[in-house]
Image (cartoon, rainbow, N blue to C red; front, top):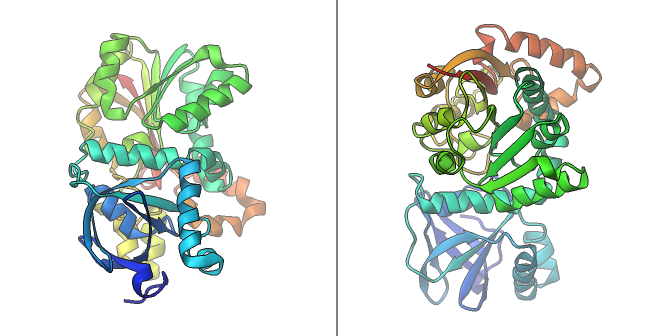
Length: 387
């Protein structure tokens, strides 16, 4: 196996369930540090998902616990260790501007995170903490990501107009939070990432909207705790789009407490990563990339079969309905986008930039009609409380 991390004693072998990966490394205070140059690399996901890492160094073997380095100060300190070890030329070639920095602590492996245990949520929290400062650029710098947000905001502005107090599940950096605050709503924004919540509070403060915003650090699965704290019928509407619900291994415990938090007939909007994406099915089939064409059929969707660098769970409309219909009645479904490409294939949309608004309007019209409303990259489904 070829390695680009340096020869001999300068590298180690990382053993995962799928491969043996040669990597450069640095050490400090009894901890081993690893750098991933690409967010699409498989090995960080393998070790972070499992909550364990086996390293074969030149002089010993280590079984340790992997965690992400999220602090900017610690990242710089660790990168300084790599710079000192590999020299400026080697550092610039292999480790400058890394996608992830991992620490491997010499301790017994933690709980398996693959089934949604505590280590899984620790991993999610660290991943979103690490990208909070750059998350807005990720959205606004990609016309397809921005299209997703514009579609969800259009529904929120219409269906939620008479909903004074809202619950946002998985607020991210506040791309929907701030517009809803500006429209006069009160919003309780919950997110698994404390750094994301800090970003939202900072943005609301700058906009003079802090008095209408409250935040709590919670995952979507923690809604029973929120119901116990807030009480039944505390919110006039709720929404969770393009994030939190797609990271939950098991949705079955969410509808009942969510319904409890809402008043009678109050709306809930969900933006869900779809199992069946027309653009991928057609495009990848034509280029004979079956793994990508049908990559969403397996949960969690494997890194390399999706554009995400963490575990995500795809759902069909019927599967999602099956979970939520005991507590909610469905009002509408919209596929988004359907005719246009997903965000990781935005280069195809960029070729038609001068006609993009017209294409987006055609896509929106198609996305509201059967069967295209079930074949988008995501689907937006609006429910009202009540079976």
